[in-house]
Length: 332
Image 1 (tube, rainbow, N blue to C red):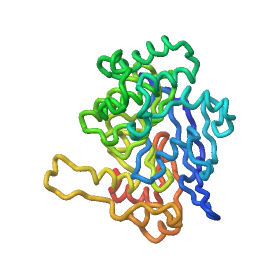
Image 2 (spheres, rainbow, N blue to C red):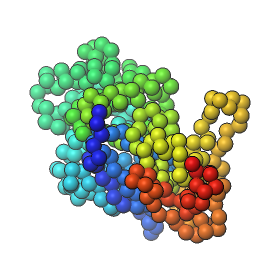
Image 3 (spheres, rainbow, N blue to C red):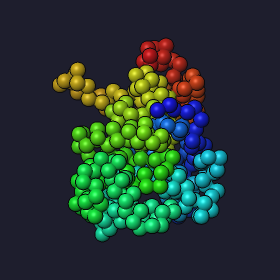
């Protein structure tokens, strides 16, 4: 699959603010990224970094007390300015979403076939017989055996991996150009994770669908992502091609994430965790967001918020000491 250099989705200065009583708490702050046609783009970070919120903001699925500003450009249209009728054509039609936990995302009292059929009906396919035939095709496409029989089953009759496949089938029902996948391998065993990742690659290669993937697992990123942005406390701290970023990180947070992964060649050795915890949205430091946990932090880091600066055409980092750490051979 050839990846286009032209973005199919452009997110610019996305900010999500929580209105709570008289307070305005920024959850996601001035976040920008692109998803190109035919690529799998990864958005990576610890829990609470704002990854899933960013995906839901793209679909305008956040509660009313959360205000979204910035630009979400989809095919030269700003999603944030679409009226409800236009939004319904985009949401679920041109852009679909795979939610994190299929057992709670799927309706337990409707068959899998009925839930696929509802999506097909909402986006123009009116004939009931044709919708059922297409539902069977989609279940077969995502690798569910005996699809013609299983289409009448309920979610509780599917295993965890099969439920995730059913969620992907629902997402594919309207032939979308972009799928937003919110940690689709969470709570699945390693074998099933590999199968779901292989399925996403297959869909990208055979159907040309783009994927924006939220995950905290760098192994997943290494396996299927083309480009990746590292997110922390509501901001992107580093971005670049996946393999380049994972082998030559240019931000202490990315380096910390990589060092905390168990290494098969160092069996029995203790892990190197990132000390501390991410800051709460209403208690973020004035300087670098990562400075309280960064072993390379200096007083300037605690007072100055770094910008995301381009290091090359493909790489960018938000670290005040990036050049210095390169000279010290911390970054290669």
